Image (cartoon, rainbow, N blue to C red):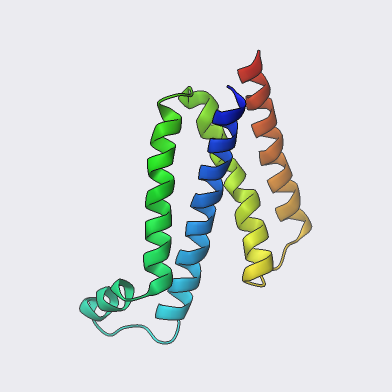
Length: 125
């Protein structure tokens, strides 16, 4: 697969997880204070939320980079690495959102990492 492709895949997955964190924080800040009474109000709140807009932008950048990755790496090799976003989101949830991390979450995340290692090894073969 090559080191550059591997690093870019990890960066793209990290960016995507960052985007999810921003969207979650933006949704909590924008919509958690009381549900908007109309769809129009919802659209206006979302359009003017810096966190939501930043999350959408970051996600868009990650998609553009992901397209570059797909032009260089087999889909069956690249896509399983998206599972690594579970690691980032677990850590982001724990550190930035104060979410509880239990044994089941850790084991499930480690199983996903194990699968990614198997896929990476198959690319080297």
